[in-house]
Structure formats: C-alpha cells, structure tokens
Length: 239
Ligand SMILES: [Mn+2]
Image (cartoon, rainbow, N blue to C red; front, side, top):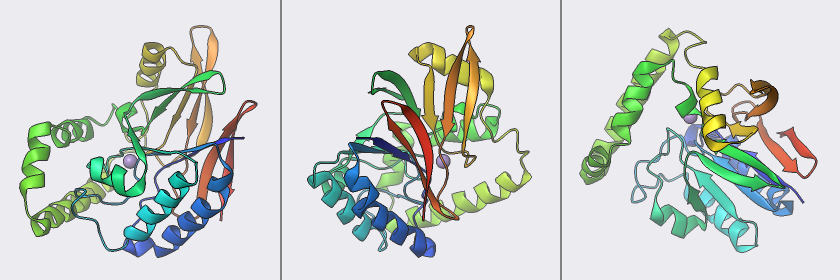
C-alpha cells in the first residue's frame, strides 16, 4: 500500500484538461492508495464555501466517491484556496488539515506544508498572507456579495501576476534557514511541500545528518504525485 501526495492543480474552467486528468486520477491511481493528501492550491480560486464556481461540482463529487470508497482524502489550504471550510468538507467528504502538519508516514515522521510559509525572502508576499489570513479580514470578505468577492479575486490575481513577473527567481523560492527552522521545530528529517512549482528532491543538511525536502509538481503541463510507502518516496508522472 502507498500514500499519495499532490498539490498545485490550480483547477479552473480554463484548465478543463487538468480537471479531466484529475478526475481520472481519482477514479484510478487514487483508488489503489491508502490515503491521498492534497497539499494546497487544488483550486485556482475558492471564494467561500457558499460560492462554488460551476466547474467544481464534478470535482467535489469525485472526491466524495473516493472518500466513501474508503480512501481518506486530506486537504491542506493553499494560498489560492485558503477559504476552504466546513461545507467543503461536508460536500467532498475530505478532511481539512493544518499547515504545517506532522504525520507518521510508515514510521517516518513527516512534515507537510503548502510551502508558502517557507518563502520568507518575499516580504511583500508574507505581509499580504498575514492580512488575508486575519479572521477579521476573512469575516469582512465573506460578508461581501459574490460579485464583489469575484472582483476582488480578479484584482488580487492580476496584482500577483504582475508582481511575480517582477520578482527574482530566488526571492520566490524557499529560504533554507526557514526550512531548517521548521525541521527543527517539528523534529523531522522529511518535509513534503508544494507551492513553488519546482518539483525536486533536495538533501538538506541538518545537525550533522541529512533531511530530505520533497517539492511536489504543479499539474500545468501534466500531472504528478509523490508516492510513499515503507521503502521511501518516489515522484511519479501522471498523464
Ligand atoms: Mn501556492
């Protein structure tokens, strides 16, 4: 048996092929798994559980089918879908998990994160992240009507695209000292995260030994997962 990790699918109406690939994945590979973890940015935009975009119900139904068939699906919020909440859990059967979260993965304590908390060189992003996660801000946002929320999301995405274009590659990657700090705080030698869209397996020196940092792929060109079992973890292409 194995446990599967994916992230950064950024599902949207414009990416109908990715939605199809994901639905196939849920019906096939994922059915064979012991559990599935989605580490953030499953959806390109989630503007509240009461505002489900028309392209998402088939995805929610497929997640429910998988959960009901006995494969638990754990979902971490990403920076695009951080408003996922209880009604999403009810409809999809998924269980939301905190970021960061430690799990026992076949005897190896493993830290799971979306990954944006590791990108501490990007001060402007971290400042915006703190604002958007503030409970008062969230309450205000959820009180707006759907059109206002959608307009705000468009504005945020345009700003992010513009700023991302201007920022250097290094600033948008993880900060290694921050990685060390998280590994130490949670006392683990294995970290799995997404967000940076730079799939890799990095050896990370830690107190005279080596930790491993797995970065999950996005699903823009094709899909991919990290498949872990008692022997270790391996990146596998999908589609
Ligand atoms: Mn992200």
